[in-house]
Amino acid sequence: MLTLILAILLQSPYPVTTGKAYKFEKIADGVYYATATGSMVTGSNNVVIIGARDVLVVDTGTSPAAARAFVEDLKLLTPKPVRFVVNTHFHYDHTDGNQVYAGKADIIAHEYVKDAIQNLNVLQREPFKTSQLTNVPNRIETLKKQIAEAKDAQAKDRLQQQLRVAQEGWEQLKEIKPTPPNVTYSKKKVLDLGGREVQLLFLGRGHTNGDTVVFLPEEKIVCTGDLMESQIAYMGDAQFDEWITTLDALKKLDFETDLPGHGAPFKDKGLITAFQGYLRDLIKQASALRAQKVSAEDAAKKVDLTAYKSAFPQIQGPGADIRGVRRLYEYLDTPKK
Image (cartoon, rainbow, N blue to C red; front, side):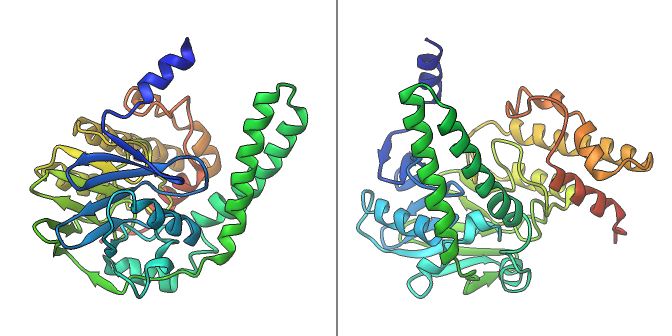
């Protein structure tokens, strides 16, 4: 009964078209939110925007293999080729499929994204370092142990499927060639897809130094990447106080639906306010612990953000991602201009 209830709750309120690697939720005419089917490792959630003339894709996933699968599944929606690709920021799970589109579409991003991909050694730094180079081999080993210990045949089959996906995902990383955007902007760029206006907006630093918000003014839809997820975002490159301010600017946009880089579509701007509260509380608690000479590692275990559990159910107890707290300590040590 519990499984049935969960399945009902997880059903999309939008019409869904399902391909091999991606399922597409129809948010509005010509606007689709793409999430993984589970058949392969895909990375970020993506968005498809189809105009009378051109197709735009928001973010490219975690590998060239994921991007190729996306392009193939996209044929279920439209025969038109992708003309524009937008990277909402530089992190691997949003850009490591770029090479599949290079030379075939304009890859567009904030100017910082180009600099980051070219100069930050992105395949040897966070978040790729932990999320891919460390966590994936660890997951593979854990799944092998679970398979060896599994008694139930169905559970074993499920674990073997997960192992196959993880192993294939690990092999697919070897093909990645970090590919920067070939078109950049600094504050705002407007695209016409043929009867459909798309605005690319830099509202300020936050999740990274170069987050793009994709705004459809007519449809009142925003695509926010990891600047605003429906869950707690990775904070290893955050500009914390500025992030709060940038989210204020986001709330002022005239939109009704947010399509985030991870999680699920949401309509309540109160979720943005809740995340601003989370950030303020994290800054306050970590600042106090730092003043007490508590290490970032220990502070990551001690901070208690459970007051925000109702908005972000992934919060199960005290603690925060160590990479975010390390970055916050570094941020607090940096003189403000």
